[in-house]
Amino acid sequence: MDPKWTKGNELKYLKQILENSDEARKQSFTDKLESEFKKKYGVKFAIALNSGASGLHAAMHAVGVKPGDEVITSPFSVLWDASIAIIMGAKVKFADIKYGTHNIDPEKIEEQITEKTKAIIPVSYHGLPCDIDEIVAIGKKHNIPVIEDNAQTMLGSYKGRYVGTDTDIAMFSFERTKHITCHEGGILLTNNEGLAEKARKFAGGGFKNLTSDKSKLAAIIPEEFQSPDFIRHDALGLNYRIPEFCAAVALAQFEMVEEKVKIRRDIAKLYDEVFSNYNSFSPQEVPEGYGHSYFTYSVKSPFSKLAEWKSFYKNHVSNGGDTFYAMMATVYNEGIMRELGYSDEYHGKCPITEEVQPTCMLFKTNYRSIEEAEKNISVLKDSLKKFL
Image (cartoon, rainbow, N blue to C red; front, side, top):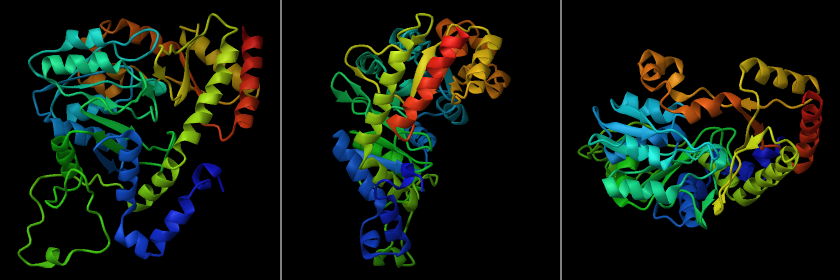
């Protein structure tokens, strides 16, 4: 079996669910997972969900995003942050990134604010925290909620504080490639009771028994629920609840989160050594006081032309090297965003994003061991030497 999925208590916890054990019936693994996140991050409320995208949707609902509103986010990201806002009827405004960090530029955020702005959604990309203090200050100045997308930044830190504890509400992902994973899942963290209750109710079908601090998911149904006149729903909502099987695996993974993040950071140091010898490659800048969690190791390559980028990739793989990733297309250049007019509207308005995105090479940090990483990175070192 793959140690990624079985090194901790994953199989033990799954067995308890399959056996319908008293322990699993009396306290759900969803509740246990939420409790451990609250303890680790020092926040009041945690809401476990079936994906990070569901978390973003629930968070936007909680802060009151409605048709006609505007949401500001980064064009250097996945589509979810923008597409969910658009599905909700909002208009997306894009703020350019910083060249060194690849993260959203607070100054560019403020330039996009209007009286219609309902939410700011910064994305901590590749595992590097955003400029949290500056972004939070902008949100408070203009009375705009800040929703953190930390899908890639588990245990990332900012000035000695865990990322995800300072904004109005923050999302983390448990998708297949993330630091901890149950293949699909996510969690929201917040210290705001009102936002927590709204997010949980929306993600839990609008059941009236849902509160800010409890999933209320249990195999033993309270007797009062069975009365013919029992009213179950006091809000509209969707079913974004995390399955118990996924919660059990995520909990087992989270019990080992320090180890899982450390190995990625140690692997990043190996890449640092390699790229320190090549001035033409620029690794993502990590400002002082920022704790990178290295979902991937991002490098701006000297290959600004697509043919050059692909040529290096092909040569590296032919040399026995492991595959690596390109940065996905700038959000407003995705096919659907072109159809909606965002590409025409924003072309040339986020010049740093448009310069950085085509050159980026994202190298894997999710190897099972340092030994496996060393083997693959040694091939990368050889490929660079041969190609350049």
